[in-house]
Image 1: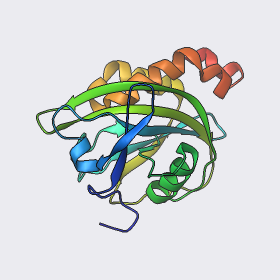
Image 2: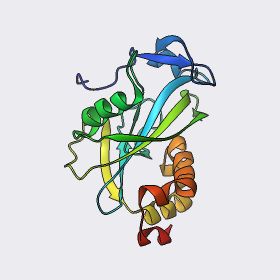
Image 3: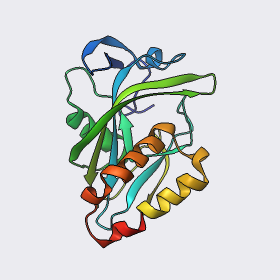
Length: 190
């Protein structure tokens, strides 16, 4: 594991349903059983053509290995803002910089087989970048850009290949934010 990977003993910020901090617990413990509610973020990075960067999670991930997901998702460290955490993780995972803008936050719980769960209060962000992608092999198995219309079609026909949080987020973004994120005639395909 490289220094830029996210180890299981990282401390995650526990929160209540209103996103107030109530403690810390290891990443490993937060994802056991039904999961313990903790703060997280999901970043959606678009290029100048309006395509979204997807990553396929590493085969070494304990939950949802080799599933396709949004550009970058992780957890802030203690005393680290969501903005700073997203910039840190996009560099660590994908090797480029990207200023992120807040869209919304939501709470979800998703079980992965009998191996553990995500139970997160997730801040959803978006940004733009045309920088080269240099993925960290400890975090990312593969990556690709995809148009919003093609992504929606793939989720509709191959939902089992995508992480549960990403499918929820993409639906909400498509329904409520995509025209703001990608203004212009290209949105008619969605």
